[in-house]
Length: 256
Image (tube, rainbow, N blue to C red; front, side, top):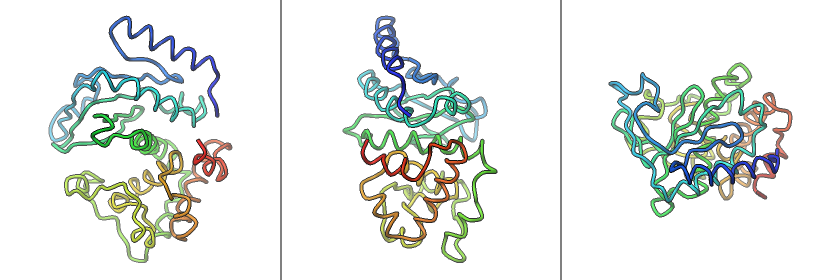
């Protein structure tokens, strides 16, 4: 799903034009990419208690790298899917909800991503995976009927129940939100610690690795039957949205 060269040319033109006008905001594949911050970027319900969203503007030196990552990430989706499901991506240096720091979150049609620089752990891989992670939540909501949730639960160990009543907030608060691949957990059907906190978070974690795989992801998929089952379930979900999303399409991501 390579973008037309015109999109790249437009991007370069937009970066130059916005740089001259004193702002780094731009548009990529029809999605508005924003780097300025005010509380108004969050939905109204996020601006008041108990959510009380807070943010901090991203450093100017990180906008160029962020745009490069977004261009690479959005190139993996068809234009029509983006147009229908995603309007904006906001980059911040930091953000908090419920007085807890977040690396990323999503609203109905927007993504909010934190980037405080590679030296602080915000690597290119981390940022791209976070984008796919959060976008998968929007797609999961918008195409919920196409996701085999019964099959997903069946791939979990017998008697397992997702444990975080705060849908991931509690996991972050308790420092149980690692996104590192964990072979011990993989035997049980979970790629990471954070995947244990809720079905949607579990799905997000697989999605981020389909589109931007961590080292060893496909080896892990082939090694552990429960992971393999979840990966195939999610591929079928994406394939129901667009026929180009096949197992081979995602396996080829390691070459990009």
